[in-house]
Image 1 (cartoon, rainbow, N blue to C red):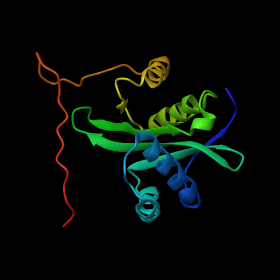
Image 2: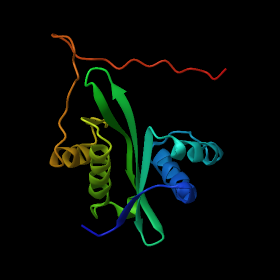
Image 3: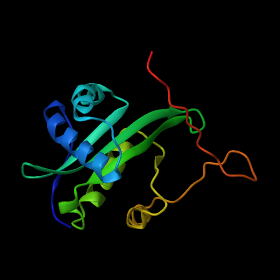
Image 4: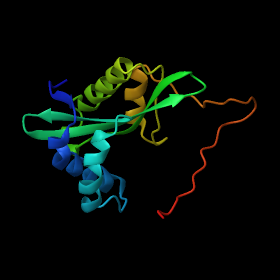
Length: 160
């Protein structure tokens, strides 16, 4: 595993973060967010204490990032963390950068008092699933009721 620097992102990292998020967007084959939307949104997101972004660096080169959201859980009666994004640029894959980013996110969640750390990944992303299993994560349906799976429901809301 290559030694890279993993650090919590700050205001000076906005251009690198915007580039990394755009690369992830393109990797996923989706249209948004646009470069302009990222440039406008990221500074505020970095100030949001419920969100923490981190970047992996090899010198001046940004190799990947994580986006972890923290929230209060009534059911856990404690804070929990959700890893919304973990992305590594194609040229840096296979070097352990993703593992280092994940370990950093887990460590920061512990430091911030989270009692659980969760994430979602595509069921076909077997490489990511292997990494998550190796780092102690396990699939969990969070089922509160017996005899059924939880289903995530979404309605997109238009801004007023």
